[in-house]
Amino acid sequence: MSHVRTLSLIALLALSGGPARGEAAPARFPLPPQRIDVAYPTRGWPRGDPQRADHIAIEVALGKLFAKRSAAGVPDTRALLVVQDGKLVVERYAPGFDARSRFRSWSAGKSLANAWIGLLVRDGRVSLDEPLDARSWRARAEDPRRAITVREALQMTTGLANEDGDDGTSSFVARLLFGDLSGDSALGAAEVAPIHEPGTHWAYSTGTTQLLARLVVERAGEDWRAFTHRELDEALGIRSLLVESDRAGTPLVGAFVWANAQDWARLGLLYLRDGLWEGRRILPAGWVDFTRTPAPAPNNGTYGAHFWINAKPGPDQHPLYDGDLDSFEMNGSAGQFVVIVPSRDLVVVRLGEMNASTWPELRTGLAELIEAFAPASAPR
Amino acid sequence: MRKWVIGFFIWLALVVGAAGYVELKQRSYVGGGLAAKEICSCMHIGGRDFEACRADLAPFERIDWLQTSPLPDGPGVQSGLRGFEPRIARFEEGKGCTLEP
Image (cartoon, rainbow over all chains, first blue to last red; front, side, top):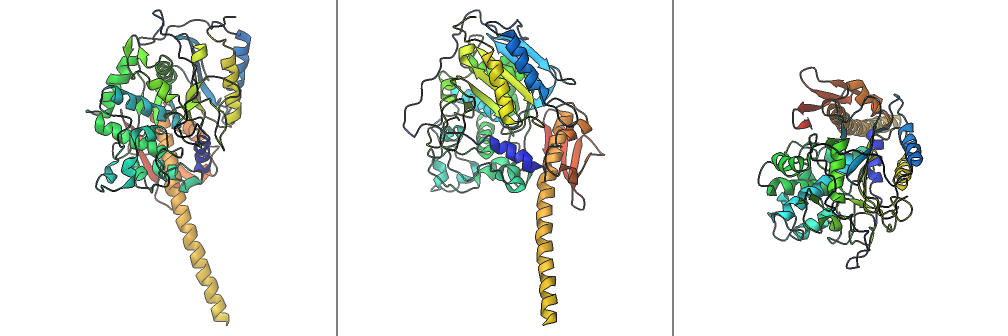
């Protein structure tokens, strides 16, 4: 079946590593200072020309990113945005798409679960070190899975046997999203065996995201869509965000989040701005640094808390980008990217599909685009 | 002796056939679910037409084995292998597309 390819693409995301449990986290590039004149796009994007930038290099990178087309002739890259110093400095769409077009997330949506949990932690409704305690585990007091914490779920170190896998229609993620587990994704993700001590082994799992999604349903204190609308849409000026759900009403944030490119950029900017928005704290203090710190499992180096980090990979892992780029990102299996680069005060959004292009080609194009912008402290 | 040989091959054919049927049913169920869900969401959330949405699934192996079409009775998409019950994804405003069992 065709989803062999889909699921292989999903599995591409499972390629990361990090410091051992208890080891000190590596130094992070500081987030940009929250200047009083910084622009926020709550009521429309402030626009400008690229600053501290090589304009020719930008055009070359954009040309590469939009070059590959599907058999139907549609460019794989359908939207490419760059936000610098809070201003939209590049906004380009493939023919047939525009600022109103909503794009699928695949796994880039998982990072929205990070934002939801951050909001609940801010309000004291969830603690990182409390048990995740999925519904079906509660009846059994001795169930070892009850030791799994919210933190470990965010860091994909639950130890549960619900890794995505890449064996086509019988992979766990295929069953979860489209197969026998799709009616109640959180239940399907919970009813698996524990195979590692929590916190000791990293494994990429859409099911784990669905466990967090269920926690949001239970703790939001209201309908999760109303919660999202008030806490994110209204606060950030987001107008197009839509999260689909399964038949049990659990948001399918692990894969099925839709938004236009400008709204994806707003989410990225929230993280670049350390969870602050127009002087208001949306995410708790320290949340973004937690998010971009590698999960402390021996086999992980490039995964934080539902965000990817360009850091030294662990065994069997690959760096996201070559060199020392201080980026962290949301990404999805068809090349959906929201890349946040603190040193350059940048958010880069690439949305579309990966019909003709390859993962390394997209990463190279994005790296060239990012490198066309100089660090904020070294004007050209 | 000949009866035994014929019986063995009949048994083997039944076993292989049953295994193939189970495999095809699984592929139709999951693959049809993927196609129905993805095309439904692409059309009704992404705002694109059926053919454009289906074309985006073209790189996936054997996607053309599936019979996929918009639902005749409302916003949604159905998809499955010929001979198997199709999976259905229905669109609801504000909620997106949900797969039926």
